[in-house]
Length: 331
Image 1: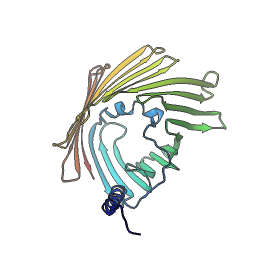
Image 2 (image 1 turned 135 degrees about the vertical axis):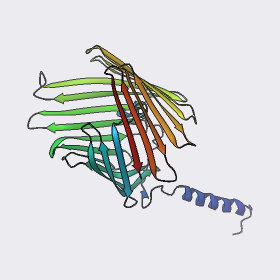
Image 3 (image 1 turned 180 degrees about the horizontal axis):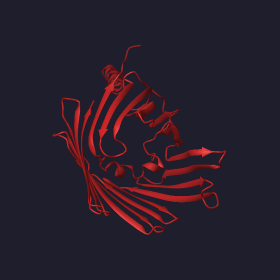
Image 4 (image 1 turned 120 degrees about the vertical axis):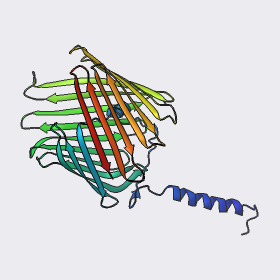
């Protein structure tokens, strides 16, 4: 039948738009496939431990001495790294690392499974496995070896819905000695700007008076247009307050965190910032706390070469101690 409405032009446009959508939806990681997602997670609040994550990420990764790190991509899914640190600290020496990224793609920045590991000649090793079983269920397994002996492990399981995230974590559980740690966390999106959550930590050990203890904590986070503030409170007398600020398209990020413990009668406050000079390929990070510690790190990307030059300095006014570091990252 002839098209009497004369909409052949719109049909061509529809076909063109579908082709454009398919091109835009191509995975950013090679040799991966999109997984089916049936739930809209745009209003999911994330996990409980990430409430203060943006503030923590602003703190500069200070180091001491000289550091050289070389990363080599062996394939689109596998890479290895070699790191050498020369300093007076216990972390000095050589370390080998390997990372694997799987083929299950859930977003433009999330691909699973993820396997991370590193080890040194002294028998110390760390390993982490993260896997997304479906669009709602994710697991994380961490293990640590010290001097060729198992030092500890941790298993976390996240269950996400459209407005909530529930996490169960088990650490160093030993049924023979009746010891271990279990943590149950829940975070929910109440309104567009408000998140609230709760955490229950249970620890059993023969070394604890009464052989077990339970601690409850509550958290809330309120988001503004270009800022958010979070509060964590425990009936045991531990109080955390955090604030993060970054204007839209601004290279400057600011973070403030206040911690208080009524039982130990201790308080501390930390101010941190990050400033990105995009045209100069340079990032500044700095931190100042009420204990007299001042830390700064500068990262300069030497484009077009795959090099990153780093300078680190730390000054502890209370102990009159100074540390300086210089590093080069290749790859």
